[in-house]
Length: 311
Image (tube, rainbow, N blue to C red; front, top):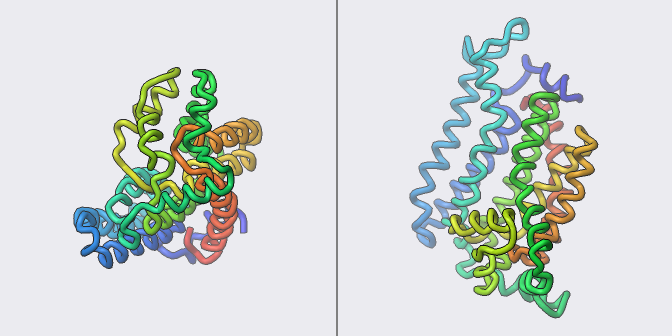
């Protein structure tokens, strides 16, 4: 089934979209998980109402779009329908930041201590040293620092830029890319909720380096970001790498010249996650695997749900 046929197949569709469905599944899982672990992590109390509100809000917006004046009219789509449809296709992007940072409240329900010593041991076994500490110190010239911090920073404009471009040029591709991003993010967040891993910043020396102003503008930007964020956890697998790979494959599919550029950026970004002290090497490896496997699983899920009427 093509993107266009999925869009056109509205008469037999459920009132939930594919993005609605996976968001409800994700929020439902986190709600159950927080309720299960409320005695082990009392901080979850303040997040339960938020996740519940998101859950109910998704259902409400889906219901609203089936009501007269808000529903789809192929002859004359109303402005209200267009605005609501756009928001329902994009709202997960607005929630990614909250979903990520809120994980700090419940990512140690099962494991009370950080699991970083285990992941450090894997890196130590492979290399005989810790790349997340050594690489950035060994190759510390300001130009190298700037190159890798620039590559790491590119993650943010990639998330915004590629979907926005597709929205104005290929709306079917836009819907597919947003779904794939959301799917892979939710997979990463689910792993983060049960595996508390800080990454390279678990080491006090590495933590200090990520918060020390030095080098050029992009190094300064990343230091500013990590100085203003107190969130810990969410390192295994690297979502920076996973999402960059999803976006790169999408760009190669729909905007090939940009895809080539993204391929180069993603290569350096993958190295930067370790070089800049943010991740263990094994985080990066599994970030690559998550990105590749996640993209194809997400893409299959998107079309499968479309065939089932979740448009």
